Structures are given as structure tokens and as C-alpha cells.
Image (cartoon, rainbow, N blue to C red; front, side, top):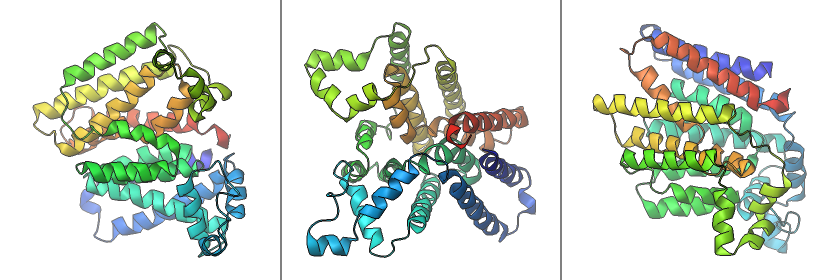
Length: 359
């Protein structure tokens, strides 16, 4: 835990100097910092993966899968050893094992993909790297990506799909590719609209409606499924397994609920500020829509916290990225240092409470 907290602290220090000491930054310094950052992240990854409970299971699967050359020649060695695992991930392992059988190299290669894809996404969406990376590290990388390998690769594909979201066919093809790595990515089909400029009255209405569902404890999932007559099929499927077999408490009116209310208010206040200053564009509008999506998701489907805990990882970083871009890109914002302090404190707290596997 201390190691990962120190890594987050390092990125926040880099962020502070990048924002407040720009005149002292030479041409080669960012590349040096990038190199050091990559080394530190992977040292922390090695440490954290030694504790992450899913890693041994992934290692066992990796050792069983045969190289793609063996599979092609013999017609087996793929699904025979892992029949319940998504086919895309199996082919990913099999192709990698054509080059190397080393599991540590495999984990490093996945880490390389994760970090590069997020970096590339930030560049394409004109996001500040020093602003976005602490959020990525605290909310996603150490709490999710280093251990849930299949879904983390699906998440990388999702980021690439978002870069191509103006081309709906390509977006959907990439989503279907991601589904072959983790079935939960089917959720991302519902995000086809996020590049649009939506009337925020509709968003406010959906938010109020989701609050009513939450406060009156109306389980919309089972209500709809029961109405359609698919209750038995749902319970027997993967979603039903996660919903019924995994015990995850729904903390009614707990800190998570108030966090979502606060974030919704904050991102809409931020949107208003940007709108007044005529700084809303297709990039930050998409980030805003994704941020709204994760809040509505968790309120609408509050009765299924096990499912939403999986799905939210695709969009959990976006509310804070939207807010942080405003804080760190607006030099005239009042009490900016105070906002930065509380924002950093939130990241530390999130990393602390979500990284229980490191305790």
C-alpha cells in the first residue's frame, strides 16, 4: 500500500511542477520524467501483482494455453484448456506464447499496452498528461488493471473505440472485439451516443429519475427482466452468477451515494463554467457525457452492486478527468491551490480504500 501511495505522490509532485514551474522545464526533461515514471510504475506493478488474488489464476491459464503455431498445427490447445474464457483473450495469450513462454514478460507486455493506450487516448483528446495520469493511477491502474487482465485489455480497446466514435461502424466493431476479451464490454454499446451534445435538461431528468429509483429501492433490472419473462435465463447466465453468487453489500445512502451526488453537481457546475467561457468542445463534451454515464449507471442499478462494480471501471475515471482539466487548465480560477489539495486528497483516499488487496 505504501509503495502505491508513494507512486501517486510522485505523480502529483510531477503535476505540481509541470503546472507551476513551466519556465524551468527544458526540452529533454519531460522525456526523462516519462522514462522514470514508466520504471516506477512497473516496479509498483510487480509489487502489487504479487498480492493481487487473480494473478495466480491467470498464470495457471497462461501455462495451459499452447502457442498459436501448436494450435494451428494440431487443432487444439486453446479452448480445450479454458472453455469458459473469452476467445479473444485466449488467442491473445496463444499469439504471445509464439514469441515467449515467460509469464512475467506477458504481464509486462500487457502493462505496456495499458500505459501506451491511455497515453495515446490523452493525446488524441487533448488531455493534459500530468492532470490525467494521477487519476488513472489512483482510480484504475492499481485498483483494477494490474489484476483483472481480460477486462483491462477490453478497457484499452474501449479507449481506442472512443477515439473512433465518430465512425460508428468502426466503434461497434472495436466494441465487439473487446467483448471477445471480456463479456462486460457489451455495456459499452450503450455509450454510442457520448460524442453528441445532449440537452442537459434530459440529463437532469434522468438523474432525478435515478434518484427516485434509488431512494425508493426500485430494482429496475429485475423489474424489466421479470416483465419480459427472462428471469430464469438471467439467473442462469453470467450476469446472474455475478448478481447472486458474489456477495457485495449495497451500502444504502452510504458514502458512495453522496460521492455520486457531489460529483454530479460538480461536473455540471464545471460544464456551466466552460459553457459561459465558450470552452465546450467535442473533446470535453465527450468526457462530460462519460462522467455522467458512470454516475447514472451506479444510481440506476444500485441494487446490483456486483455488476456495476465491474461495468463502472470502463468510465470511472471520466468525472474526475473532466473536473481536473478545468482546474489545471484555468489559471485564473480562485483558490486553485486549495482545489488541488482537496483533489489530491480524494485520490489518496480512493487509492487507500480501493486497494484492499495490498493491505
